[in-house]
Structures are given as structure tokens and as C-alpha cells.
Image (tube, rainbow, N blue to C red; front, side, top):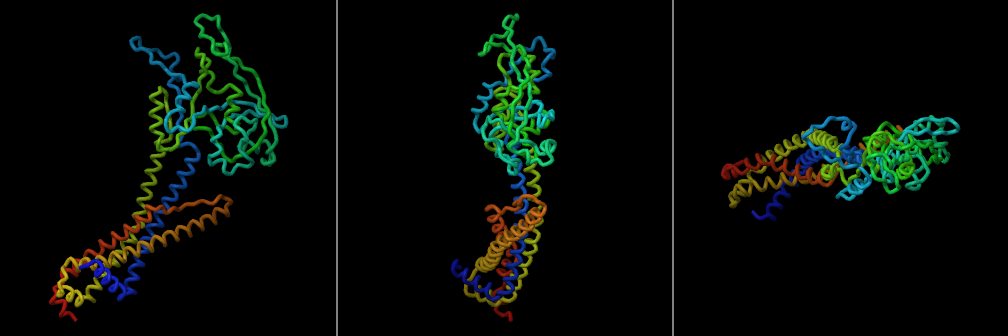
Length: 451
């Protein structure tokens, strides 16, 4: 049977029992709509959570530390084992790591204790340096005020709890100044000491450091709700933030300077470095490259894999639950086509008497099932999209009443549209197997005698 004839017969048969076929198609559409609505919710939640987590800078960040640790000091070594050379995590290492593929930036994590004085009231606090790229993080979406105007500006951003300690109305602090008192680190020279390291570029070998009290006036430019930490390997929490370049220029005594003072290296070393990668998926490759350079690394990549696994399980559960309605709708296709066989036995007998093969009869019923499945799939995708929009609209109304920002918790990607329509078509064709086989087995003589 030609394709044109097959299409014409299938269309005519569907139009003859319009109400019954329409209801069957609507049953398929409802099944597809439930499937799309369920999966779009899972996909939307995954995209929302993944986007928010990526904007925190945690999942695309690698923390790099030296292989040297406090445990290395005073640890007895075996006489036969030669000590492995340990690369210093210095400025040269930072530049080498920054030149690796897929690395966006490399910056040290700077946190140091300081005394902040506002209206003659001193407070001890941990101060942290923020890189310029931190303005892209989610925590600054709702900032009161603004981000730093320059990479080395004498400005500060306060966490709102600390701001409330200073003033009952935190926003009144914007534009005001506070005094930051800190301990500046100045290296000591000891060129006459036996075995001393050679002088550095400034003529001083690193035989310790002296502490000089300093102070700087900072203008308060912003207030944030939560802590925009510069990494996840830092010491303690910080509630006062300054530009990273300013923090480097201050040369303040940091938490890890005791370890640096116990060395005789003339090159200053970083306690750790934060490496931003252009994609969370490239983090393992960047970690391997850094390890080959002789450093230790840490990232939250394994946590990200666990999250993806959890969402995969959630999507599978939602997809299975949504497919139940489609499975019920497939029973409607079987019922519709079986009824069509009883009503069209004489027609089938005439087709066979005119030379139609069993394959032609099967194709006819497959075409009718396929058309219902295709139309139901397309209609169901539209219904599922509309259901998702309505649910998202209602949730945003609730979030607005709770004074929370609106969110998009549903998403219908192109692969979900294609998969839903293809799945509906496949289920319809499978449902048409039994009716098509039954119609093809009809005896043409008995079919022509059927009244």
C-alpha cells in the first residue's frame, strides 16, 4: 500500500470516530503533560540549585596548598630515605598555576586579625580580602550600597550582623569611615649569622619578621547579608571585607605567618591559593595539572558529583511517576483500536479481498495509533509547559509575600520536548501492536460475512 493511500485511509478512519479518537488523544496528552510537568520541575530545581552554587564560587574553585605542613617539622626521617624536595607556594608558583589551561585566575586567600574602631569603640575582628571577581557572586546580588570602586580602594564591605553591632540602622553606615588597626609584617635581616640565606632583592634575608602597628581609614561602601568568603579553606569567619590588592599592600600579619617565620627561605610563601576554573567540569583536570607541579589540592568536585547523582535519582523518580498516566492512556489506545476492528471488520475484509496483505493492514492500524500518539505528545508538551508556568507563577506570588526574590523552579529544555513527543509516539505504537496484529489475522471470508 502506498504511503499516500495509507495516510488517507488512516485520516478518514480517525475522522469517522472523531469523539472517541479525540478523547483517546486527550488521554495521551494528559499523560505527556504529567510527565513533562514532573520532569520540568526536577530540571528546574537542578538548574536553580546548580546556578546558585556555581555563583558562590565553590564548585569551580581549587584550593592549593604546599606539601609542607606543621607535621613536617621535627618529624624523624629514615636515614636511607632522601628527603623529597618541596616546592614553595610563592609568587613564581602562583604565576605558573595561572598559566595552566582552563584557569581563569589565581589569588591568595588573605585573612588577618585587626582592630576596628568606629566612634571610639574598638572591636576585634577578622578581615578578609576579596578579589575583583567576587562581585559576580550571588551574595552581592542584594548588596546594600555598592561593590568596591577600585581593586585597591580604601573601602570596606561589612556583613550585616557586624553592621548592626555598630549601628541599630545598618544602612546609615554607608559612606561613613572606620579605622582599621593592624600589625604590619616587616622582614628582619641577619646577614652576619652563620649559614644565613643570601639577601633578597631588598637586601634582607627572611630570618623572621618584626611587627609594626599601622592603621588605615576605610570608607564603608556596602553591606551584605551573608559572608562572601573568598574560599572554603580559610581560618575563621570574616565580617569585614576589603579589596584583595589593598589587603596585599597592607602586608599584615596573617594566621599562617608563624610557619613562615620558622623557615629560612628568602622568598615569601602563601599559605594557600584559590584557583578559579572556567568550568566545574574542568576542575579534576586542573587539579591533576597542579598536583604534577608538586602541590596539594582540594575541591568540592566530589560533592558536586553527589549532587548530580541525587538529582538523577530525583528525575528518574519523577519521570517514572509521570509515566504512569501515559501508561494508563496507552490502554485507551488499545481499547479504541480494538473497538475500531469490531466496527470495521467488513472494511478489512474488502481490503484483503482487493489484495491488501497482512502487513498493509498492520501499517494502517499502526498509522492510526501513531497519529494519536504524535498529536497527544505535542498537545501534552504544551499542557505541561502551561502547568509549569502556572505553578511557578503561584510560587513567586508566595515568595513575594514573604519578601523573597522571585525564582524560576521549572525548565522545559529542548531535549525534554523531543523526548516527551518521541516517548508518546513509542508508547502509542507499542499499544497498537495487539490491535494491528488482531486485525491482520482476520479471515477475509468471515470478515465479509460479518454484519
